Length: 216
Ligand SMILES: [Zn+2]
Image (cartoon, rainbow, N blue to C red):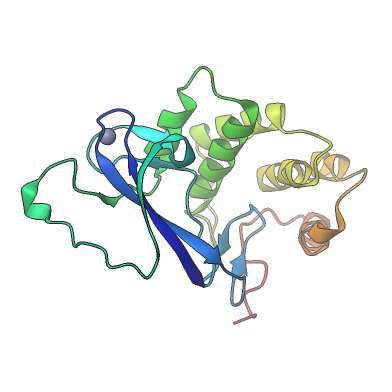
């Protein structure tokens, strides 16, 4: 992975400074994939689009916050003096948690695209308890509510959204609906995911297991 600039940005709630790492280029070598869209790639960090302020309880879309400085990846960075306890000391943003995503969903003016982003990330967090586990837990109510809302707002034309719909029905154990949602046109670049989903649906398998566990 080739790191890109580190941006110093400002929290819109408290004006505290935080850092945002970026990547100039990366790849999916050695990456692991799961059918719910989660990817674990050592050479391609998944920088969150929505995160939390490290100084206050504020949450935000990182790209919507104000950039106050930008440092090249090879530039010497001053080591922040954390003993100063000032919100002007730039420290990394808080990585999103269930709570942070739910806070983002409280925005009444959220766009559909942003709601889909937050809810699909939330779905992955709810799935973590079952990820690669032999014994799978039943879904909890907030997870079911999140699935149902996603099914309402996902587009039936766009491949990625269509496949997420198929995946939700599969995880619900509703294989008939999964098959129904699995029709029409799909982009070829999603062929591997489609093959795998197809196999899992045929096997009536609703587990959240790594797609490529032996590719290490
Ligand atoms: Zn803040």
